[in-house]
Image (cartoon, rainbow, N blue to C red):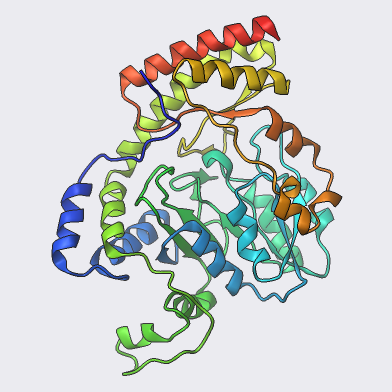
Amino acid sequence: MKIPFVKAPMIGNEEKYLLESFRSNFHGGNGPFTRKCHKFIEDYFGIGKVLMTTSCTDALEMAAFLVDADPGDEFIVPSYTFSSTANAFASRGLIPIYCDIRMDTLNIDENKIEGLITTKTKAIVPIHYAGVPAEMSHISSISKKYGIPVIEDAAQAVNSKYKGEFAGSLSDIGTFSFHATKSYSSGEGGALTLNRDSYFERAEYLWEKGTDRSLVVQGIQNKYSWVDYGSSFLPSDILASLLFGQLENIDLMQGIRKKVHDNYLKTFEAFADDGLKMTYVPEHIETNYHAFWLLFEKPQQRELFLKLSLSEQLNPYIGYIPLHSSPMGKRLGGDKFELPITDHVASSIARLPFYLMTDEELNFACKKFKEVLNIVFAKI
């Protein structure tokens, strides 16, 4: 049996809705299924306004426009994240200021943010790694103290909660991903989440290629014009139909992912005495079970684990190359940052296969990973 790192989820009425959307002849953006997705996300997650996008990257780029910043200004971001988190702001001329992460959740270390703030700081951009939200209470208090907006990169945290509130509703601006690798998927897709009324109108201009077309759609005026920056951020309604079929089954899908998480946890807890760390969920957080990671004490252990896993038809993944040590990160001054936890995690972490596994796949994966780890800790 071969266990891939991820499979795109399929569970309910996706095929039915795809065909319905295809036959409707409404294949552009902001169609019936897009509006259904907007309403579902706004109502279910308690978010003020949602705009579906072609990717989480696009949602982050919209967020970067909404922040009042100029080239040369700065934004604070963890180095341990995907390039889009930083690229959306750096492409507008902002300079990334990298913050180290916590050892337990691998999220941005909220206690190190304030020391990075300068008069040029225009945004704080935490990510919710592996579906576990960052410590948003502390981050929000910093935001209020200095008047700096927070943009949640909640790409991995759709349906996660922090102190009873959903990710994406925890700050004025947030972003979701519905990529094929995510818990709920439209293949390619994302969403911008807004929780401050003053952002709503401009966000729609950005979303509609910099025009005020939304006012025509609402019947407020009879023609539209170019009024702002923007791009073609709207996804096809066909993709929205695929996502809506999964949103209808959001709790069912999360229950299956919880089963994978719980079985992994039971399997790997036996290796804690060998120094193995694994996905950690604080008591005040309800995760969406997006991912499961193992963190080894030594990079050599991780490398042997990856090698042996591949030989058993298992496909774990190494995670991110830290942005501060990447080629583009170095071009933007990444070399000056000392981020010891980030560097250790990047050299020693393994992300495990995680998707809507069958019982047969899950039992096989747990059995083989246990065998592999017994060999790893016997040798290193």
